[in-house]
Image (cartoon, rainbow, N blue to C red):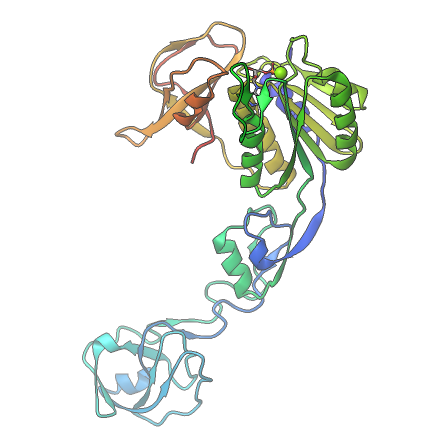
Length: 399
Ligand code: AMP
Ligand code: MG
């Protein structure tokens, strides 16, 4: 049996490349950027008026003039006029391009404007006040967004502002999800007393949907031939297979054997961890991978949070976030030589430390306990006694 770190290294050593695709910028939300986004002009592109008021020449003000005849009103979007008589001003609006014959903006709050004359009531602090000068945010050509960013609303707005109507993003893999087990029935069915509704496949599908990936879903009955047939097709049609159930020691746990029989190469089976010990991982073809997750719902969820989702993020080139640490809030002992991922609820204490409190649960079959947890606290396999106040890595699944 291998350690969590070894398992993670093996998974990370699979680095498929699904390529890139250009999408309309409105559809790029949530996708991973695959090109440089640069400023196509200076930002701002002209000397932008930053307050509604009047534009004057500072020299006129220095010579003592406080009354300015308004020669013209200049709105945002107007081409700036190029002439201004001595001791006159433009009434000018935020967002307008500052006429080059003026150099200072006095806001309405400091003026009394009456009968076509603006009187300055408050001291002008400096030449150039209330002007957002051309190129002071970014120069034309500056790299604004690097590839590997997951595109959010701010990135969409910046792309729009520099005229990127089409954006190159990472292509998404084709993923199929499999549930397995004769005890499982569809969500809309009433289960017989000895049956349950299938839920893991919906968990996996929803988690992938959050990363922008749509998935196909297939159910495998506990029948060797049927499983083999379904997997044979699946490896031809998909980049990634995610299975749940059927990988433990049971009589009907056919998946490891069936996967190998359709040409999936086993890279590991079983990891020194709780939950999720029977986790099976393999590869096929040029860049296909198979995550066969143990069927207990908490195990499936844990393997998804600890391995599948972080690997997908890395594979798509998304820059990984620094690990989060949380402080254990009670003493705890765990003796088996397994890395324990404890379900915890997170809260901030009075000194703003992130604290982790255990969520009571009945083991890896107790999926309803996940409703109370925010994530898993990683308690290392080589430690048995864990003290309140010690910091450990926190794998968040609820934001
Ligand atoms: P297995 O790994 O197939 O031995 O399954 C372990 C436990 O997880 C059993 O109690 C199964 O009924 C349950 N299980 C397996 N697959 C699912 C699923 N898709 N949804 C809900 N429970 C499942
Ligand atoms: Mg089963």
